[in-house]
Amino acid sequence: MAFSTGGRINTNIGANQAYTALNSISRDLGVHQLRLATGKRINSAVDDASGYVISKKMEGRIRSMSAALDNVGDAQSVYGVAEGAYQTVADILTTIKEKQTRAANGAMGGEEKDAIAAEIKSLMDEIDDISNQTKFNGTTLLSGSAYNNIFQVGESTTDTLSVSFSLVSAGGLLGLTSASVTSSTIASLTVDAGLTKVNTEIGKIGANVNRLQTKESNLTTAITNTEAAKSRILDADVAKEQVMTSKLNILQQTSTAQLAQANSSPQAFLSLFR
Image 1 (cartoon, rainbow, N blue to C red):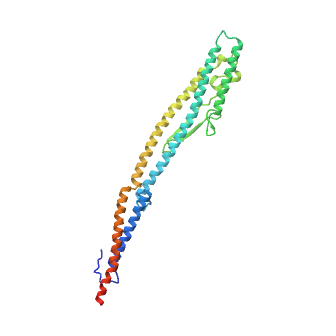
Image 2 (cartoon, rainbow, N blue to C red):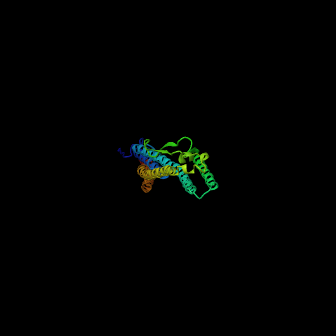
Image 3 (cartoon, rainbow, N blue to C red):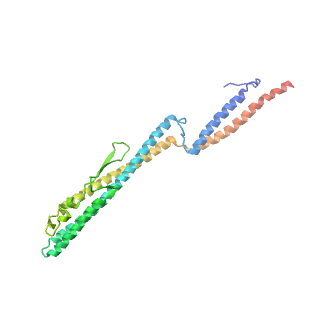
């Protein structure tokens, strides 16, 4: 660092040095004030190039995992809609089983059996209605073309879950269409096989929903941990920044005073000309 006795007034070394120090302090003060204003230690790549890159990479991971978490929620909703429909169908099949057993009563006459057949036909039509009306976001789940979609349920594009359902129809479950049901064909209805199919689907849904709940928990934990890691790199320590701001405020005042003093010190040499 250059020093001057002050006798060479054409170049005021002391004033230049005080001015340089004042500029440096003011610049640093601005950085710390910006950190306090934004809450971020890194506001641009200039502050910490490697930290900026790493934090952006972490932010990308967090946003990807957050989207995957939304996908998990949507998949759970799809399963929930389908499960509700399957359970209702299972209840209807149980009722049909009851009617079928009741019809196998030798004490019943033809009219009573015809009434049971009509009731069973109505229940079978209801099964078809449920199948056609079970939709998620406008897409049918249990009728028409088979529902089979892929959900990305993790950060990686390979972390996927296939969601699919077996189609439901009264004829497919019971072996007869509702139009074919009469008092003489009630016994031919394959109710037990239909119940087995529906309950199997409900069991599959339960297993997959358990998987999704585990993935949901893991994703939530991973997001929280990644947020914490990003915070350590990106976020400002407010207490530390306030300490630095107070220090630099004082230094700014003292350097301003020293600049003023350095600018006035050459005037002392005017006494030599009296």
